[in-house]
Image 1 (cartoon, rainbow over the protein chains, first blue to last red):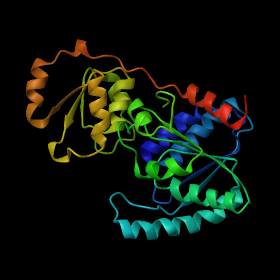
Image 2 (spheres, each protein chain N blue to C red):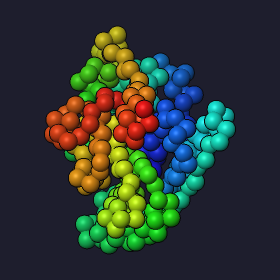
Image 3 (cartoon, helix red, strand yellow):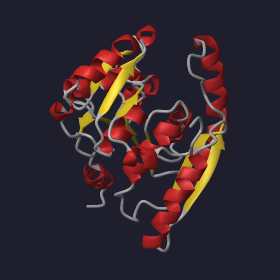
Length: 169
Length: 104
């Protein structure tokens, strides 16, 4: 969604072309991200001629302030939906930054890893907006990601296993 | 103004921006080097959105006030005390990631 997409595209801006093909996954209810992504990739294609990317939508796992019990159900549904997608893409690296959408994808990837099908490196970057507290996705993925990056020193203190690189977006 | 796609042009032309505490608004404005006053909705005090505005205020990058104190703030403000907000460095992220995946 909105801010998350802008942040993640900034994170991608300095990555070399070795990070290819890029598979973008976002919520079906998201109307604006597709345009931002295409615009980013179009600019990128001006410099790197073999640029490859795909776009996939998954059901949104949770609306803002959705109740706990219904969130569990919608998240489970999103996980079931993402499992075949993640299996098909078999990513080497998953980069995510906080929308609820990332949780089912990461969980699918963890399952694929546990089943010995494909082990992906999961890198989570918490949003620049999170100065003192983690988002819900962050709280969950802090334990399940391989690298958890925060952008403010307070969070590094509270979550010692995290990585602090300063502001990166 | 309601649903303009981008306020970038307007921001570029402005001398002062008065905004709500949304992160996108704060960051976009500060990145363009414009002075910013953030107006906080007292009824939403526990919203995590305030975290960023408060931190930026502590860092001297913006002024903040409530609806009721806005006029007073505008009258007494000294924008020269505001500190510039340096841009983020995605290159650091790229370097880190290259090490992580072994692309050194």
